[in-house]
Image (tube, rainbow, N blue to C red; front, top):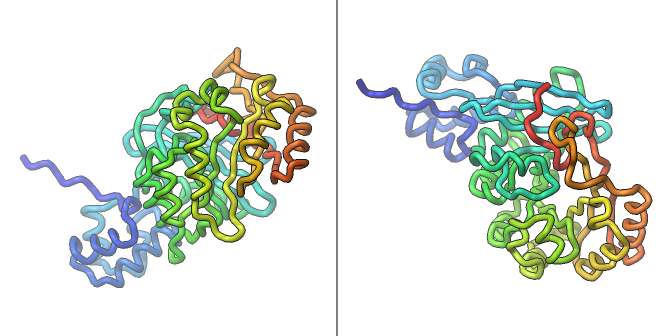
Length: 354
């Protein structure tokens, strides 16, 4: 008995792939691909039957061979500060988390790109999960569709920005990341421009060059230490790329006129938060076209780690660190940690239940 052909997840098809599928596989006129694309990415259709302007013949053919494979929402947790974390179940049963962060009148969504993470940074709960697999374009952008639908359902603001800062190292899933970014920016679909898309990475030079050449997003580099020696202790796998090699790559990153490379710096109490560390950071970045985001360490919830490896920094030390950087004309921001009470803040994503 011949096994049935697998169903095509329409969300895994780029614009050109969808057109080829409609024209070549389904033998339909090209304009049907435009209609289908609109239903998928602009209207957020969850079922082929919703697509009222498609012909009965096309809907019948689609129903036989294709699905709209959205992630399922297992758990929704809402923080006191308005942050929303969704625990999503993928088609194979694997789970990831995505976070909707209120930013005034609109929301920013933190997207995952891998199930788990292979980088094992010592301050990150996600790294303790280990790496399971890469996510597909449809799974990555399915988070956006589900996030938008949830915001609409509960009557909250629009989703305006995305940051690839959730589970996983985006540049270790480069092919699907680039496909997702291109689809994300399509003006006939989700229409989230490159200036509203940020890719966070520990820094993989070859992949950063490809991302830069694509022009699809600006990078945020997880630096977290001002010296190679300290970075090796905090991020042993990421630090296999020497800091001088990483910074040389970023110096060559093609930026638009008002763009700068963002360096993310998690402040760990008593570890990397002294004025001496600030001076080292100035020596490292002082002449570069950049900005620095300082992020206070978010200890994991007690149910995950009763004895966390680090402690949060003293607020006075954070302010002194920031003022020193600013005194040396380095643009520096304190990034407010959102959603700590639901384990949704930076470094806390670890598949918590409701």
